Image 1 (cartoon, one colour):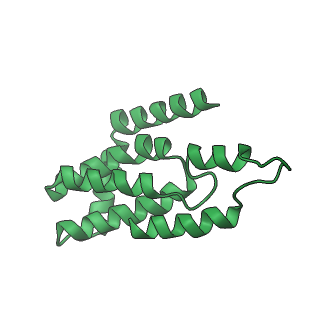
Image 2: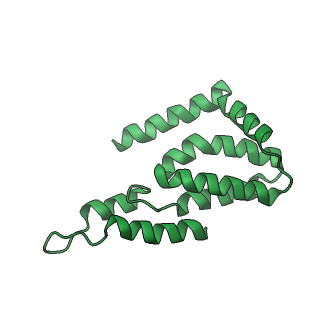
Length: 135
């Protein structure tokens, strides 16, 4: 399953880049959003990727959305700042038990001697919401 996820994500990212779809998406996004300040773009990208990062794995987000974010970051004029904050936002998104491979592993396999799970979905939601919001 992991090979399919990574290989499929690589193919989708390659297609986004080579077909020009990433550039079209970035152009439409820039047309819809008037960027008056670099920090406005950083906040917009981080919130968007943080929400999406809770629903999908960070590997998939990086492969599919970072080409678009990179184009937006270059157009704004501060690619290093935007990309570093985008990576931080995606890695900090951990609100659900399947948001990251670490969360999923702990949720599925961490049990005590009576086969009770150490963490529940509510534990992930409470702690993950706090971490995601603070980033």
